[in-house]
Length: 200
Image (tube, rainbow, N blue to C red):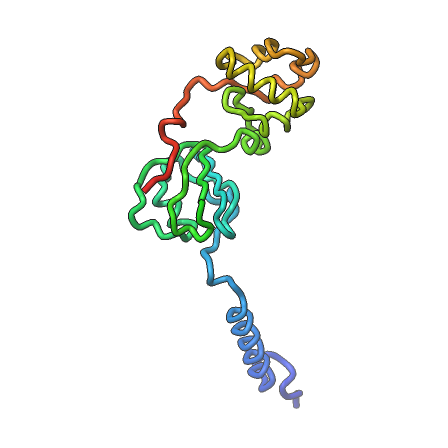
């Protein structure tokens, strides 16, 4: 004495499962999910000792990634789905930029330091001796004219020894200097120029 086809296991539930299966197949067939590897959010990639890598110029994969500190270039390229045949297994430093001149990733990237403005926007202090005009203008109170004078002063009289050294730049207001000091550091090493370039 019961109703037929109204609950789980009745004849109608088989039709529902078939429809659901067809909808899922249609979604999979029309989506681009299989075109590229799934990339977890940066905070899920690495815990503990991590480095930051920026990808520029690579379709669908631009951004900053946190990866384990011992990651090499070959491993990283494979991880983002780029063929790494013939690429050196050179270790990568923290705050590295991988600049792809070919958006498909067929050519290996140029490897160099990440722009100081990108580091700053990620909550890191800006290196006063590496920052260019485009980096410096994002600091509070620093306009294009003052940024150019900072770069010119560094070129003319050598690197800054501390953020307080900015006082030697003509026309920088004391209040501005005090306001930006917490956002600045001075590098103790210059390891990038020798390593910069295309790797293969």
